[in-house]
Image (cartoon, rainbow, N blue to C red):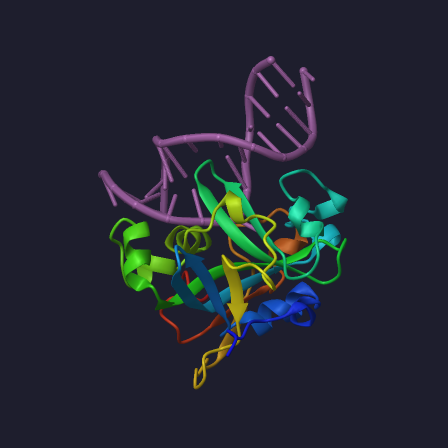
Length: 202
DNA sequence: TTGCCGATTACCT
DNA sequence: GGTAATCGGCAAC
């Protein structure tokens, strides 16, 4: 029986809708035949050309953010602060650069490998933050542009059977700066009772 | 070509 | 709570 995975139509949604629907889904990275996976417990929507906080604001298109313009279901990985990677799920329609930032995971499979990748850190320090989860899963520039619906290196799966998400919280996005109205819009979603969410609920 | 600062994290006081 | 680490994109000179 084939591994279930989220397919193209699932990703052909606006970023706000997809950000909410990705909560509880499982991000899976396969490294050397071994599976590392975690349940998405926190996400943020970036609405594309009209969103001042988006890398694609105003239609900006460069080699860095080219993946945002690809088909829905593409992985967009960017490098920031000179040392960190963050990963996004591209959505909406091809050419409309909307994406969902994956901000935190509850570790599920391959925890030992994640611990090693994170320099021995464990528990809530393993995957609670966009750069932390990329380090734990081994996601970097080499996976930018990967097709999540076909890749044998990274994909997404529906929530595990029996998974109980609990109440969903919403807030402003984190780290986007406060100079404009887009900074205060509630485009972050998280599972309220999950300890792996990246910071205290505002 | 220079300079500023970022969708962050870890470590210090 | 404050800030250094460390690179690349982009606006301004």
